[in-house]
Length: 57
Image 1: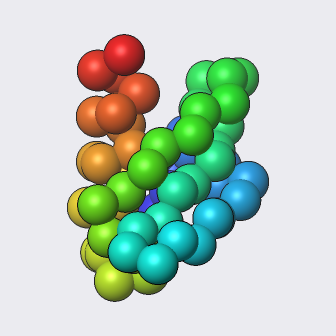
Image 2 (image 1 turned 90 degrees about the horizontal axis):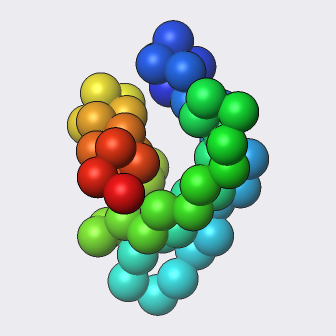
Protein backbone atom coordinates (compact mmCIF):
# COMPACT_ATOMS: atom_id res chain seq x y z
CA UNK A 1 0.00 0.00 0.00
CA UNK A 2 2.73 2.48 0.90
CA UNK A 3 4.71 1.77 -2.26
CA UNK A 4 1.63 2.41 -4.41
CA UNK A 5 1.49 5.83 -2.76
CA UNK A 6 5.12 6.52 -3.66
CA UNK A 7 6.52 5.90 -0.17
CA UNK A 8 9.40 3.51 0.49
CA UNK A 9 10.07 2.86 4.18
CA UNK A 10 13.75 2.73 5.12
CA UNK A 11 13.69 2.37 8.91
CA UNK A 12 11.29 2.23 11.82
CA UNK A 13 12.59 3.54 15.14
CA UNK A 14 10.76 2.27 18.23
CA UNK A 15 10.35 4.46 21.29
CA UNK A 16 8.47 3.71 24.50
CA UNK A 17 5.33 5.56 23.43
CA UNK A 18 5.64 6.09 19.67
CA UNK A 19 7.41 5.14 16.44
CA UNK A 20 9.46 7.25 14.06
CA UNK A 21 9.64 6.28 10.40
CA UNK A 22 12.39 7.22 7.96
CA UNK A 23 11.20 6.96 4.36
CA UNK A 24 11.78 8.13 0.80
CA UNK A 25 9.12 10.11 -1.03
CA UNK A 26 9.76 11.80 -4.38
CA UNK A 27 13.54 11.23 -4.11
CA UNK A 28 13.83 12.90 -0.69
CA UNK A 29 14.35 11.26 2.70
CA UNK A 30 12.02 12.21 5.54
CA UNK A 31 11.77 11.35 9.22
CA UNK A 32 8.28 11.49 10.73
CA UNK A 33 7.40 10.84 14.35
CA UNK A 34 4.03 9.16 14.78
CA UNK A 35 1.71 9.66 17.74
CA UNK A 36 1.46 5.89 18.20
CA UNK A 37 2.86 2.70 16.75
CA UNK A 38 2.92 2.12 13.00
CA UNK A 39 1.87 -1.52 13.21
CA UNK A 40 -1.40 -0.60 14.93
CA UNK A 41 -2.39 1.73 12.08
CA UNK A 42 -4.24 0.72 8.92
CA UNK A 43 -2.06 1.06 5.79
CA UNK A 44 -4.23 3.84 4.35
CA UNK A 45 -4.10 5.76 7.62
CA UNK A 46 -0.31 5.40 7.81
CA UNK A 47 0.13 6.60 4.22
CA UNK A 48 -2.13 9.60 4.81
CA UNK A 49 -0.27 10.49 8.02
CA UNK A 50 3.15 10.32 6.36
CA UNK A 51 2.10 12.32 3.32
CA UNK A 52 0.31 14.97 5.39
CA UNK A 53 3.50 15.50 7.42
CA UNK A 54 5.59 15.82 4.24
CA UNK A 55 3.19 18.16 2.45
CA UNK A 56 2.75 20.26 5.58
CA UNK A 57 6.47 21.21 5.63
